[in-house]
Image 1 (cartoon, rainbow, N blue to C red):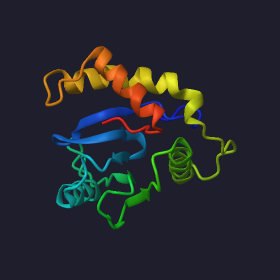
Image 2 (cartoon, helix red, strand yellow):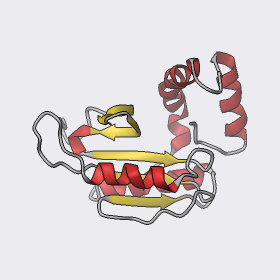
Image 3 (cartoon, one colour):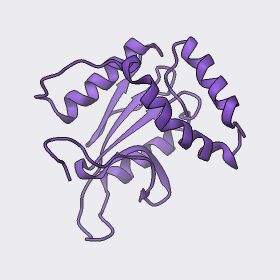
Image 4 (cartoon, rainbow, N blue to C red):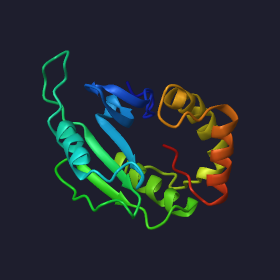
Length: 170
């Protein structure tokens, strides 16, 4: 439920809505998902197209009601070009700078709440909160996984990427 126009429930790394396929960010109350498509992980167009279709054709398992999930994809410029379709918006980053990511976040907020008063977006102002939110998720993701990055190794990786202006972690 939205309280005073604010989103109250955001799920990072949701694997329930699409039966095992991950949505990077899912906001059930808005029927909205946000995917960050990094070039490293999004070279398989068929996988991305399949996820788009799953969102477009989503049926609530509890009610049986057709409730498409609106999908917003932020794609790094080196990802294969992905066309927009019904319910799917694609925002392509020109580079991996903070300014460019700020622009993408501003576009997302304009799509979600076009009449919002405060148009300011500053990822650096919230860097600590963002890091705190994703560190436990990264630890879980890599715990038994393929890269086996843990604790200080993840911190070291984040620090290195931030120095290079990269804000994508996946």
